[in-house]
Image (cartoon, rainbow, N blue to C red; front, side, top):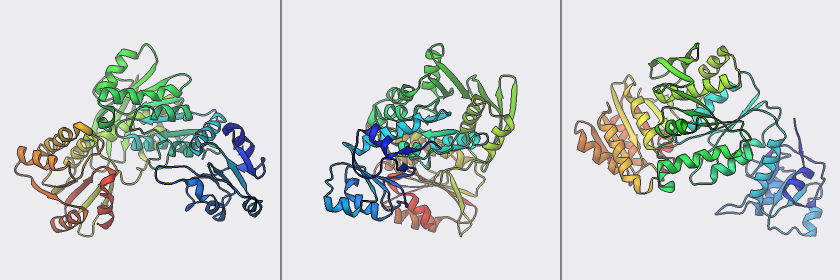
Length: 459
């Protein structure tokens, strides 16, 4: 394990040691006094609504050994009281977090795989990490801690790891640029370019530019892309002779292609074709989008010289982060598919296709608003309604200001689908309980801010 000491932190942050021992080893880092463990390092992050530095005493009382704070005066009495602890003062705790994580990353000469894209980042990260860990002791981003706080805190969890798989999210230009300069990936992945956050960035072309910031932190740019995505395919054709680009796909000829695809509701099978090799792959989750995720994992496995049997094993045994295609059987015998964490037009469409392939008496879709779409919001919600109208969905339940456009377009295009537009989650819960019965499959999907996961929990 490559340890960081208090002295290292002082050096990289230009911090001031108020009290404490410079030789103290800093192993576990936390920004939350409620979950602090004995011996942890507490970083008092300043957010929009609170200043974590003011909770430094609480952190020490709850077991922290070291605290890193800003804009707090420590009295002589307080210094005496906590004389067995370490207090470091910095100009900006968030900047300090970035610098400490960057320093930690610099201590490791290991494969670092960074994943971004409009949709599918977390599930792709999960399946890649499952493949990589068949050969390497692997650390991965937990959940979707993919922002400017979650990513550095993930890097600070590096111990005796031999590989790191991180997810990078963004809402605006410059955010992935920051993350990649901290993580310094050895291989980058872009899963697709869709419409998520198009309200902030203005166009899909701008979304591509923002995602390509991932290359900025790389000494030698090496990237794996979904070659079937229209914008990524175009970018590949324009840049394939300039940088090292690896591809995967189903429709377009790629380095790793899928053939003989058999899509099931609970799993899928396909043949991955790489040059003169063929690998029979089983994915333990249904849906064509998971075939793409698995293809990406195959590409990473081959890039890291992982044996085919290990690649197959890693894909077959991977587990999804919760709230993403989490499937349960309800007390009344209906099947609940909880995909309530996030939503974009592309992921909504993929979920509808998945529901269509599910063997069910009736298919019930529960949809809420997709966020951060700006002036495109009405158009993209209507496109979801259009997709619903062409599907096998029997009952559509919606709630949210913009979801009315899903309902309206569905009614306009297909009057056979029973529709309900409801006020809130309680009404949705009541309607699901009233309508659903054994043999039904219920898909719940919306942006996280709609809190549809609460509906799933109560069901």
